[in-house]
Length: 400
Image: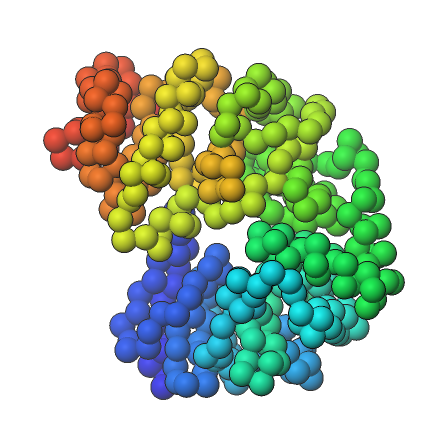
């Protein structure tokens, strides 16, 4: 079994890169690492970063007294060996239910309360991280951030229950079974912080912004221009490292609220924007699991690009990681440079699709759906980034 140590997981530019010279099958992966089945009762999670392996090992050891934690066997610099469950996730278990059984609600409340009593700071778990065993007991996986992130309210759990239409049923039973917990959640969800006092500065590690660490709302991610936190079930806030970034993006968002792919904006200020929280997978993650590119996806992407052009956007692009699949169709985030950078072709989209081996399919479908746009891409002036349509290979010229 020792040869699993030859498995290497690294972070690529936009996704994990997995080198697996062993016979152990890949059974899952996320942002931190990849999981491989070792036997009928054991699996190993191999991490891209040693610090995350250390964090999960510590959390698993700390929770071994809790019945819903996986058994912890061993850990190394970049891996953790733990219990494997051949069981459905709670999302799969509940997917066709019209109500959530009281027995399930009681078990979920017990898990959340036990995490709190054990001094874990992440009192939350998405449905896909909860397994339902044959005896009805539950097990919870993915504890990397159990002592790092502050999640006093199970926003991920509530989000997932809402997506399968069981949130109201769950909360009504929580209110009856544990009114104290219900009131704590309700207070948190409606509590307001002074966003104008939050400090966000540019020039952090890798040129990413640095954010005031005292913010208690759920951290979603950060980049070069800003950082995003989820502040309620359906809203998030983006803080900007420079007021210029806020002004640029707010101009785009506010002047295009009628466009179906633009997130709804609730409030703007000099250093932040409160907008719609998008529930659904990003298109890059979704396409990793697909064997082919559907015409519907091409049609929606093409629609976004055409509406951008018609609406006066200068940067005509739709990177897969910025496009989310929601119940209301595709939505797109990150519009800081949409009015300021001249780019006639969706070069990053082309590159993303090439990485997923879907660029040929996309271009052929566009050629049929919209020959004029296909022709424009093919015959674009040399002063703009180019795409060689004959080989479907991107050549970049004169990038800003």
